[in-house]
Image (cartoon, rainbow, N blue to C red; front, side, top):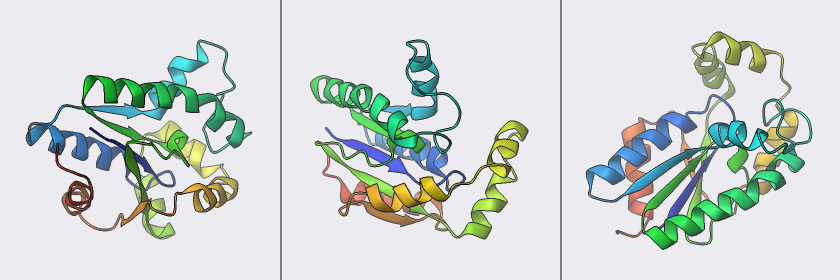
Length: 170
C-alpha cells in the first residue's frame, strides 16, 4: 500500500482533493484512511507539543518537527495494516513518505483568495490577518522534487485521476 501527502497553501483545495481521493480509492476496493493534519494538531496539543495557532504562524519548523514522528507512525501502521493513507494539510509540508509520494496543489493567488472568502468566518479572519510569505517559501523549498504538482484550477475529478494514475494499483 502507499501513502499520499497532499500540501499547498491555505485555500488551495487540499481537503477537497484528499476527501475525493480517499473516496475514489475506496470505490475501487482499496482501504484508505484520510488523516487531516489540523485534527492531528488538535489531538497532539493535549500532549503539550508546540502546536499553537495556525501552522503558517510562529515557528513553522518546530511545528513540522513536532508532528513528523506521528506522521511516520501512521505511515508504518498503514503499511502494516495494508491500507492507503492520505495525509492532508499544512502540517504535511515537506513530508515525503517512504512508501508513497507527495502532491502539491498550485493555485493562482486571486482564485485562492476567492476560495478563502467562502471558508467559515474564523478561518477567513485568521487568513486575512496572516502573512503566508514564510510558509509559501518553505512550501517551495521543502516540496520534494518528485512531488506531483497539480493545477488546483482543474476539476477535482481530474486531479484524483492524475494521482491514481501516478500510484501503483493495490
